[in-house]
Length: 333
Picture 1: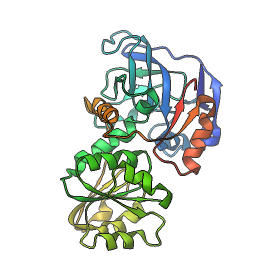
Picture 2: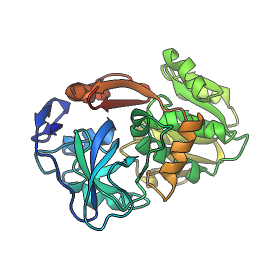
Picture 3: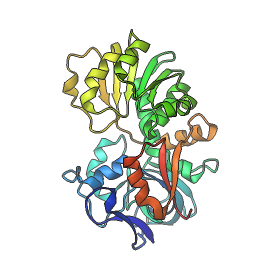
Picture 4: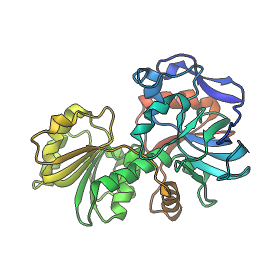
C-alpha cells in the first residue's frame, strides 16, 4: 500500500510517500481502508522529537490520527464493528500509548492513518460509525478539533448571554469552538485576520478583532472594559497568557488548548481561574459531533484537500501557511 512515511525524526521535509506492507488486524483490532485523513499539529510535534522522551517513535513511522474509512477486516473478539461498516474517529500511533493518560477515555491506537490502510483498536469511544449524511472528508476533519471543542464547552460551563473571547478562531479547534459557543447562545468575540472576518462571522462570531492589531489586548479591553466572562486560547503561547488574563472580569475563566501549556503556577494570585483543556472521547461524543455536523450546527471547515501523493506538501503547508479549518488528505482523489 501507499503511505506517508518518516524514517527519522525531523521537520515535514523528512516525510515521503512510500510503498509499505498492508497492516493486518490482531485480536481486538479492525483494519480500515482509509478514505480521508485530517492533519493535526500533534502529528508534527511527535515527528520533531520533542516528545521522544515520553513516547519515542519507531521507524519507519506513518503519521496521522483523524480519519474516516471502511472496515475491511476484523480481528478476533471484535463485535462492535463488521466488515463493510463506514467508520470515523481518532487514534494515537501505537508507540504513544504512554500518552493515553492525557485523554478522558482510552484512545484507539493505530498504525498511522495517512495511508491507504490502517489498523486500529476497536474498543474505544474514539471510534464510531459514520452516518451516511456525513461525507468521509468532513467526518475525518471532525474528531480532534470537535472533541477538544466539546471539552472546552464542558470545562467552561458557559451560560447564555456570557461574553467569550476566542483567540485563534480560524484554526481547526477555533473553527469548532466558535459555532458550538454560538449554538449555546454565548456572545462570541473572535480574533482573526481581516481577510478571515466574513469566515469567522459565518461560524457564529458576533464580533471580530483583527489579530494583526498593533495591540490586541488594548483593543479587546476597549471592546469590553468590564472584562470578558471567559477567554478560550487556541493560539497564544503560554508566556502571553498571563497578560491576556487582564481581559477577564474578576472570577472569569481562561481555558487554554494551545501547546505548550503554561505552568499553572504562573497564574497564582490572579483573579481568574486557569485550566488547560485536553480533548478526549466520551461514549457518544463522536455521534453528537456527527449529528451537529449533519444538521449544520457545527460547520465542518476544510481549508484544503490533498491527494495522498501530495500529503508531504500538505504537512509543510500546515506549518508554513495560514489555514482555515482543517487540511484533509483524500485517498484516491
